[in-house]
Length: 181
Image 1 (cartoon, rainbow, N blue to C red):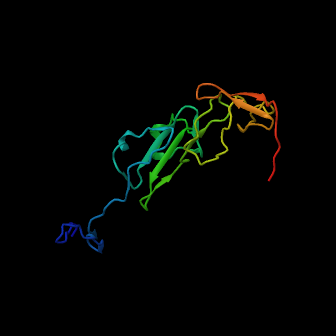
Image 2: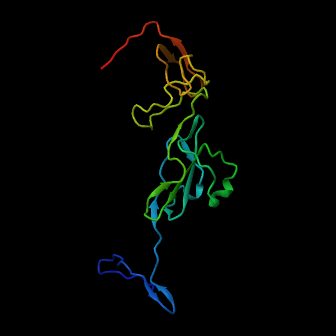
């Protein structure tokens, strides 16, 4: 019992676990594997133990969103097995975990999204087409200055010049056109 068995072609045969009232479970337990950790755009992996290794059931893969980004759904508290990361900024921490079904599930959010009003217009090419986040970023949360507190261009304004290293400048548009469908 507990030994792997092979067919004539060299393939491992599935093995059933059998309960023995004296010796307990007989057979071989094989851990659930989730494969290599997923890539998280605009983040760096902070769990070097899993940089090349396969994730197994319960294993976490942790990432830190890059400058100008935050996680789309923040952790309220750090999982106990990640206590060594107590100094981590939870607004920027992405935690994926290998679950019992062999999938990588999200403990925190899965995506790094731009931080609104930090004065950096960040790329959003990894987000769904026409994602409404950060159309502009003028570095403040003031309304009626061309870039509203949700980082959307306000009607009648044009914003330009923003980049990962500098904020947008917004100006009243020289002319506006109203349209409807």
